[in-house]
Length: 353
Image (cartoon, rainbow, N blue to C red; front, top):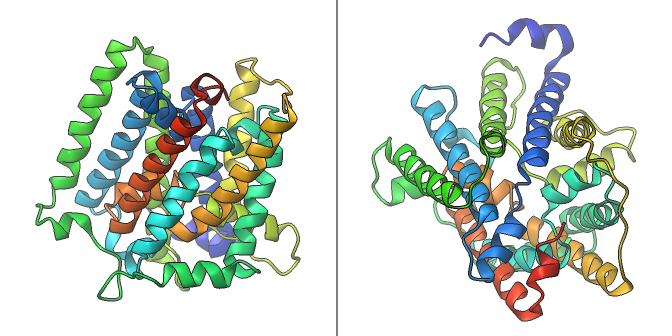
């Protein structure tokens, strides 16, 4: 795609924000209609079932892998230049942060991405939890909690000045990632058939994965025509939530992909919910639920920043390019969420949104 006319007309930073807005809008619509949620999938798994929520998550993840790996084979992007692959990763951060994030999303009844989608539909519980998440993420990035985060992340760092490319480390061919993605998609479709998931929900679940690939492709294309360095990135909500919050508080803040992403998700989810007649104000149903949600949101804010990404950023976006620490974080998010769900022994409530 020729982005030169667009960049020359509106500038590089606004173009990045526009691409973030587009990626976010696709994500928001698809996530709202598919009810995609890692927290719900892990709670369902903890209860001993491979139901519709696990099937939707697997389909989203596999679709992202398939689209992204296909894009790489077609030279539409290069994961070697992606920000999360080009810098050292933290194994200790992925493990500890992943466990914290996983436990936190069960307590908060939604990961950071899901909270943003629910907030757009009128869920006031998610608004409160999302704000706490964003504030704690910012404090963990450059505030009082940043020294603790830096220390924990520095305990075990990837070697060679870069993150680990799992495909290369395992000696798999260039098409290996695509094959793994297709195999996972086949498993997801088998589970979807067993759980009688409708075609529309499957299409929207695939749309969440497509949004991740869209972000990668758009930022890569922009990096090829921009004079200044452009980060190659895609959907994630820990850092972007913090930076979006600061953007509206700091008049000197600049536009970037992240600043368009978060509003894009909100707008997309809100429009999808409005068209489906699903806008509804909801609040905390008890003080104990509010306490758990606030604790969970804080755990996600620190854990996501420590892990290098949230359930979307590490779990799907980083996983789709086979970043080593992203896969470690994803595994630990599952483990933390399953353990927390089993310890709380409240599967029925946890499955609610």
